[in-house]
Each structure stands twice: as C-alpha cells, then as structure tokens.
Image 1 (cartoon, rainbow, N blue to C red):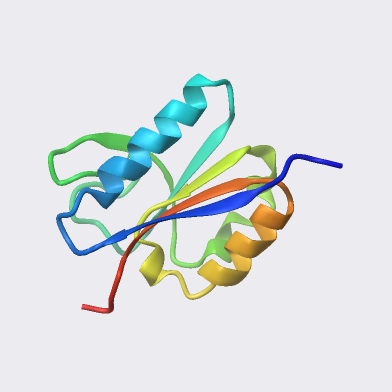
Image 2 (image 1 turned 90 degrees about the horizontal axis):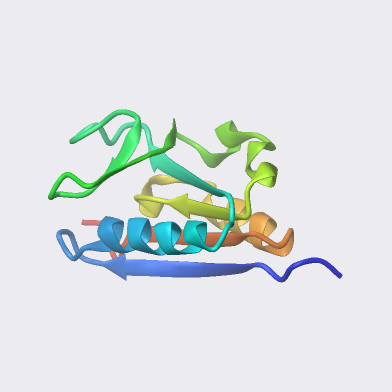
Length: 115
C-alpha cells in the first residue's frame, strides 16, 4: 500500500494571509525532503506572472495555468501540490481528489466565498 494522500484547505476572506500560510506549509514540508509543486491561476497577475506572491511580496515560483488539467501528468513527479487561488479553478475538485487518491498531499488556499 502506498502513501496515504490528503487535501488541506486554507480558506478565508481577502487579505487574511492564505497565500502566506500556503507558502509556509509548503516550505515546511519541503524541508522534510518532499518534492513540492506550486500552482497558481494564470489570470492572477497582480504581483507576478510566474510566482505565488503574498501581499507583502513573499514569492514562490509556480506553474501558471487556467485549468489544473494543463498540469497534465507532471503532478505525479511531486509529493506535495500547493494550489493558490483555488476558487478560480473549475476542475479543482476532480484534480485534488485524484491527486490525494494517488497519495499526494494537496494544499489549497482559496477564498471562502465568491466575492
């Protein structure tokens, strides 16, 4: 039996520190030797086009896409998937469930509403 996967949600309103917490968790897991992939929504260009970026300018390089299907099977090479702005991805539920069922840790930061 392989590693057991899971989905962690970081939810809250704007400016609550969700991206900061996502970066913190991914860094902590990476220190333990796990391979991590950060994913960001490509239309979110507020601070960076190629990084998850906090309001106070902490950055983490990320794969940029509009749908998680664009990641293709590349996610399989990683132990942990950090997804920022999860509310924008139409395929977030299927992608996350599939990855967790394959033994991956999926950490999602997302707004807790639509506006």
